[in-house]
Image (cartoon, rainbow, N blue to C red; front, side, top):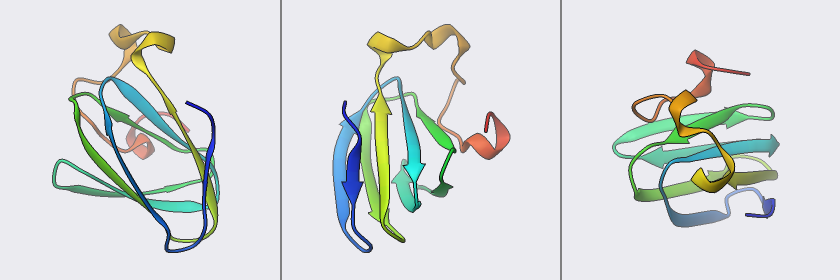
Length: 88
């Protein structure tokens, strides 16, 4: 998926499975499976199951979704979690 820009308060929603969501610029709020996560530039979040993801830009931002086809899922966590606990 190409990099997606969002203006402050703009919302995006999509289905994702076995994917990393990368915050490439700005700051975004992500809601997934009852979890609320704030990502800042350089942080990422892994989505294991095929759930609805809702993203709102807390400030102008850009994000990218890296799908299973381009990642090694054996190195991915068993459940979705913020990368503050994983990788910067």
